[in-house]
Amino acid sequence: MSKTPASSDSKSSPDPQSNNVPFGILLMIGATVVFALQDGISRHLAGTYNTYMVVMVRYWFFAAFVVFLAMRAPGGIRATARSSQLGLQIFRGVLLVGEICVAVYGFTVLGLVESQAVFICYPLLVAALSGPLLGESVGWRRWSAIAVGLIGVLVILQPGFGVFNPLAVIPLISALMFAVYGLLSRYAARLDTTATSFFWTGIAGMVLMTMVGVWFWEPMLQSDWIWMGLLCVSGVTGHWLLIKCYEVAEASAVQPFAYFHLIWAAMLGVAVFGEIIRLNVATGAAIIIGAGLFTLWRESRKARA
Image (cartoon, rainbow, N blue to C red; front, top):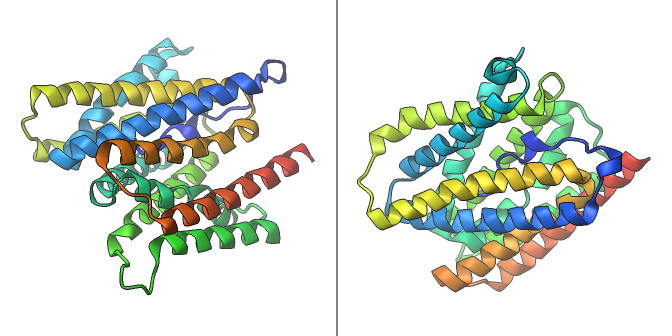
């Protein structure tokens, strides 16, 4: 997946006695490396085969992973799957898998660098939407950071210039979908456990993609099946690293390091796919990251207060 799909599902408050921030940072950086590699493999496969088929096979493996975790949990699959808000859980899963399809398509038409540069604005979208969707208080400082981040997006998209590419809006749509998914995950956590949300993320996505993807099946070269296997394994590995990260360290301490995802993706795009980092993309991404880090810092201070 283009980003950390289970990030909103897997966050949990660690035991204060086991808050190992240095180890958590290493796990977060490791997760960003794995997810960047996953993005690169997704771009390669979706550039050759249908996006729906690629995402479908990936979700088969993801669903098998969540079922495996549910079987090992107390009470088994029945206890893990039990939810009083099943409709919301299914909608979350459907929204995420739709976002992944949009993101992977964006990789094929824009490349990793520009797609990720725009997508990293999603924490700011979460901050902006947390008020109307969850009723959370959004102060002037957060709105200021959101406005600055929007300026960064505009610097990347360059609206009003002759070089503006309408396809550049694709990762912005992906970021908006992922932001709504994250907020719905936060809302679902009021009644359901992390394990339940994670389970339905995989199952709902797998069912939908199977219903869609089977109609777009294409024969795949044997060598590309190896890449597909690596894509599936990297997805599970990334989820595991992220889950472990939030188990051993506070989210506010490790979340800023999630921006390393953009760095690795950019390096991969330049080195493997021959992409070019344009000045406006680098400038806009720096503005967005700065605004995002300020928002995280403010939330961390409010949480301590």
